[in-house]
Length: 185
Image 1 (spheres, rainbow, N blue to C red):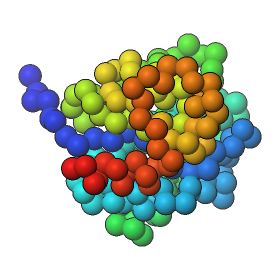
Image 2: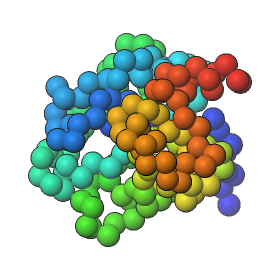
Image 3: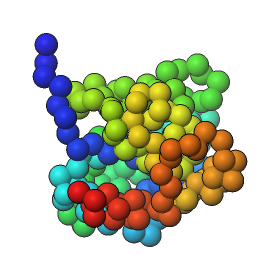
Image 4: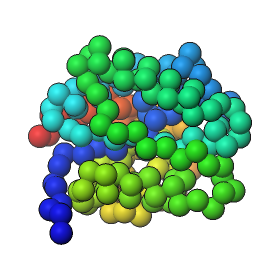
């Protein structure tokens, strides 16, 4: 049996946490616009020894708004921006399915997080999962991870609904979460 690693892992949603979100979907590298401070925050976390994984629903693929090559180009842009700040992402996990597909990978289902757990051979207990929507928080809870809400993206909307937010830490943005985490270590 393989040894389970206890690593410093952080899981981030993409749209609304790392980059600006849009109700019209992010359909091209040009529309992939980082939220101010998010790239620098990811780089600081990486330099502090954290493994960073991204878990993102990308139903725009199923809806025909963009294809896998375009998604890969968006993620290449993210990698280049991070590299310029001395950071990197250790894995990007995405669900390409639409909301009616009954897949196991579309958040709030736990599939993407279970894939991350398996890939990094780690435990999910207390792993921060940073998101801007209720589905991110539900996915985190379903695997025993620690749900974190940011106010960016759909975060304010999620806060205003105030459902299922007991015990959820709330931060203004990814940068303020990273600052808090790194100060408390």
